[in-house]
Length: 404
Figure 1 (cartoon, rainbow, N blue to C red):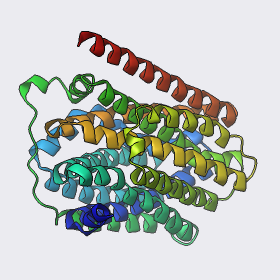
Figure 2 (cartoon, one colour):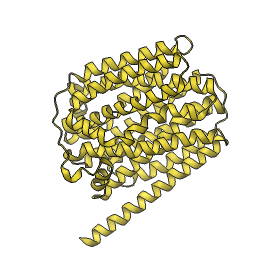
Figure 3 (tube, rainbow, N blue to C red):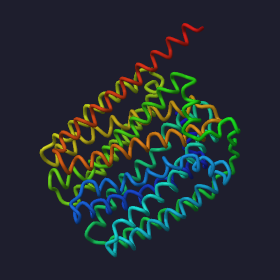
Figure 4 (cartoon, helix red, strand yellow):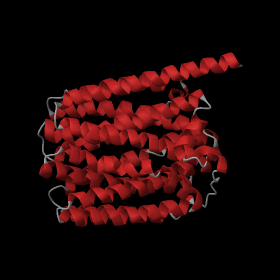
């Protein structure tokens, strides 16, 4: 309890927490409003999922540039500028959508995802650099709670704004949240980041693989985190609007309600990992949680009404978040301080690439087949990937023991 109080009183942690809470609220208000508008007007699951998936394209393609900016521009300056740019892009999205220009809106989401990747990478590095020991263990498993709580607030605010405010006004509200978060980040201390040597200049993806494959536990954390980020979150980005609107034919407000339930599931899942740190240390926890999450993913597509959807979806997101938080916390704790920028940028890129594939594929398949079949395909793929990672981890561990 004393460690929790120490962390809660730490001004640096509070600044990160509040800034993330406010900006994530603006993010979810904008994303859900735009996605619901596209699926309602265009009747396209692919178009609705593209709003989410397009944000992850540039972080994958330009992963090395994300690392370079964090190293050369500086963490604090980088996340301040990225949030200010994010605010401008949010406002531009509202202006373009008011004119009915969908393609330019998706282009804005491309660049919006890139600057947000800088912020996300910078926040993880700040946690690694500012805390150590038990405080690092707590901070690494709880700092994202503010992001998830922002999802709850964003869903509630979005449901209140839906039908009462224009998309341009919603975009302006979203933009203001990023201005506020940028001002918060300005109060963080200056952090020196280790620059990558010439031996690692082969690119962030290859550098990341070279680092995580040295240790089977680090590799497992990396792999399970990529599955959680890519497969589970990718499916979620498509299903959060397809299931309520296209499958169950519910009103737009159901999207916001599902967002609130999802965010609550995320918060409870993250808290479970934070309060039970033994879950992070347990060697096979990630495999078991991924297996259960994959099964619940399929169950979400079998819901016949709104109540069933909200209950099953809460369980799916709760298990997903336990898998994600445990893997991310373990990855941060096992990483060396000098490697954290490369590992974070590289893991985000791998996970984001998988997210793009799953989100767009789920949305596209929803247009040509029953969504229940889509759920079975995605859930089965996640289960298969988890088994592969577990087998690779066991094989590497055996070779290391034999070599010793």
